[in-house]
Length: 116
Image (cartoon, rainbow, N blue to C red; front, side, top):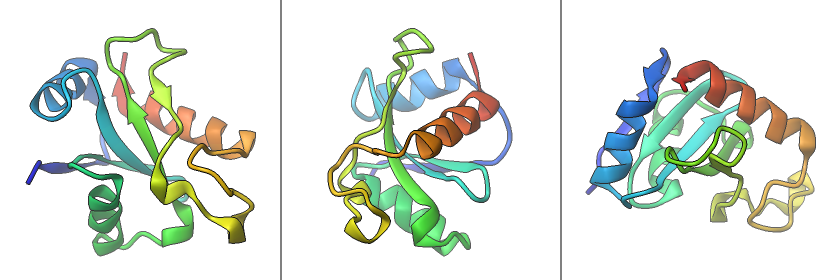
């Protein structure tokens, strides 16, 4: 099983690139807790990182899955797509996050915790 790291303090883009290299090569799966402002990064599935955050005290409604492409430009580095994002009760019926407010919050958290 691929390691999952819960990011609460700033890490470097080089560290993210290493985690990506150890998993999918050019991409790493991550789950962001938009309430607590933390990220679980790594794992084979978004659900793995989601479970790690739930065990760490997060609430499921605050968790959103993304993919991080560390070699892309800062504007294209985040893909807001994951199976865990399918939430009809939260008005998100597809894998991609629809709410611009949630996307902006995720982007701010990623920019705060990953130094580009």
